[in-house]
Image 1: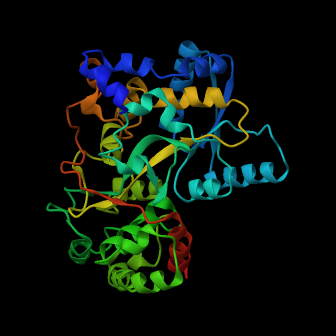
Image 2: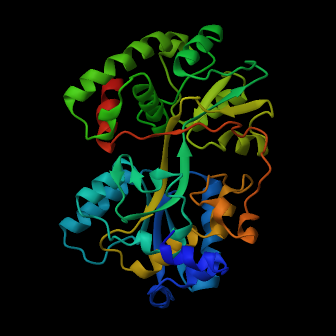
Image 3: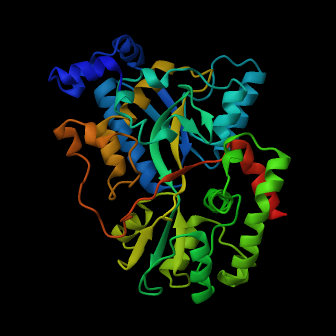
Length: 391
C-alpha cells in the first residue's frame, strides 16, 4: 500500500476512498469506455469460463467495457503468435490481455512482447499482499517489474482419501516414499510436461537439496548436474511404488482425479490448495478426502494477467485487470462454489464490508495447516528439467 493510502486510512477514511484518489485513473476509465478487450485465457475449465462470463457482465455494466474471452489450449501458442506479430511489424495486435506466468512471461518479457510497466498503477494493486505473498512481484524468480498484474495464488498441494489410506499423511518427500511402501500403486503424478507433474519434479529438486540457491538463478548445465542426482535417486526409489509401477503416468490432472474418485488411487496432487474442497463440494470426491501441504513448504506461485505490446485496447485491458483485483471479483473467484482460486489480496486489511465477502468458515477438504511457499525455480529450469525426465 502506498504511503498516501496509509495516511488516508489513518485519517479514518475508508480504503475505497484511497483507491479513488489514484491520479490519472479517471482518464484511463474514460478511454476504456466503449472498448472491447480480447482476453486470451486458458479455456479448459467450465467453472473458470463461467466466472469470466460473470466478469464480462460486471465490466459491461460498471465500466462500459466488453470482455471477449478467447479460449486457449496452450499459452505458448499465444506467445508464438505475438512474436510473429512483432516480426511482421503489426502495430495493432490480435489480443489485449493474456492470462500468463512462468516461462511464458519470461519469454515475453525478454523479447519485448509486453506493454508496461502499468500493473502497480492500478488502484486495486494497493490491496495486494505483496509482503505476505512475495510471488505477486516475482514470477518464477523473474522480477515482474509492473509488466503483469497478479490475479490468483497457487501452491503444490497433496490430497488423500482417508477412507483408503488413514492419516497421518506424509509430511515430507521422504515420508511420501514411506507412505508409498505401505500403499503401493495408490499414488502417481501427471506426466511431465503437464505442469502439475513438472511442479512435483521441482518440489523434489528444491527440497531434496540442502542448498537450492542455484534454482533462483538462470539454469546452467553445471548447476543442473549438481542438483539433479538427488532427484533421480529419489525417483528411482519412488517410481516402482507408484501406480503401474511407474511405467505409465496420467495424462492430465483430470485423469488423476478420476482415478482417485474411482478408488484406483488413494492420493493425488494439485496446484490449487482448494481443489479437493472444490471437488468435494461438486460431489466428485468423497468427503473423506483431505488436502495437506508438506510441512517444510511447497512450490508456490502467482498467476497474472499481462498486456501485449501491441494491444489495441490498452486502457480497457487495465480496467479489466483492475476489476479482477477488486474485492468483489477476488471474493467471487475464491468462492468454492464458483472457482475456489485463492486471492492475492491482503484480506485482513480490507474494510469490514469487503472482508465479509470472503468466507471465513473452512470447508471440508481444505488445507488445515498451510505450509510456507517455496519460490519457483527460475523459468529457464523448466525445459531442461522436463527434457531430462523424459529422457
